[in-house]
Length: 288
Image 1 (cartoon, rainbow, N blue to C red):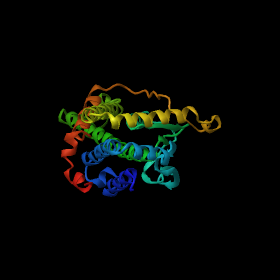
Image 2 (tube, rainbow, N blue to C red):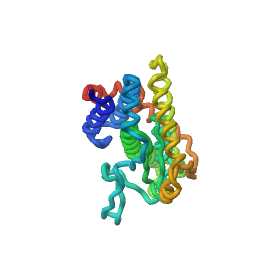
Image 3 (cartoon, rainbow, N blue to C red):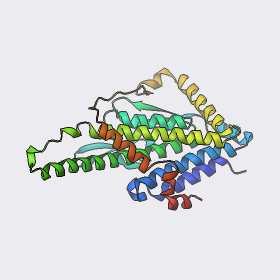
């Protein structure tokens, strides 16, 4: 009998094969839509399994730790040696923790019965959970990470050009132009974008809860989450030297209401809800 988890992994491979980065996929909206399809896939996977198949999956997929991208590799780049995820060489692993990337890791992993851990003094993420769950969580995390990195800089440059254009129309030039209104803009944009994506994930799961009349799918995800928590609780002390279950990280930045509003609006534009799926019909067809 073919295992349902094998089917999940094959479809996951199809999604990855569409193209590895948001730019290659064609648009940020299409990249986010691929992530939304993964959400639908996991819910359906958990719902369609028989109790026997689910019990077998539990035995074959014990909770374990999975470093994102299979770990980090280092190489010389334009500004010296840098680290990158092995499976995602375009995603840099920085030598500091990043608050917004940890927020992404938290909200995505918790939505799918997983948890995440950080490495001290690094942006490296390790997910904890069952293999098929973590595979989906990792893809969603990398997809959204790329979208946030790309769009936040693009939107900041657009806002800066608007300020420059307005000042130029008033006759100002060079150092006469003030960009004080953009203080904290990018950080606030990311805060708004990530916060809205968090709300979208919640909306998606509420919708799934309504469609799952028996509650089977979400009950199984909750069961996976409980197993993950038990794994972390029993984790040996000597294994906690370099990794730890992530505590919240506070990052200070100047609040910028315009940036936060723009981030939320962009999240709606490229969203992972039904509107986002409608913008990526091609992606959906390739997964059938």
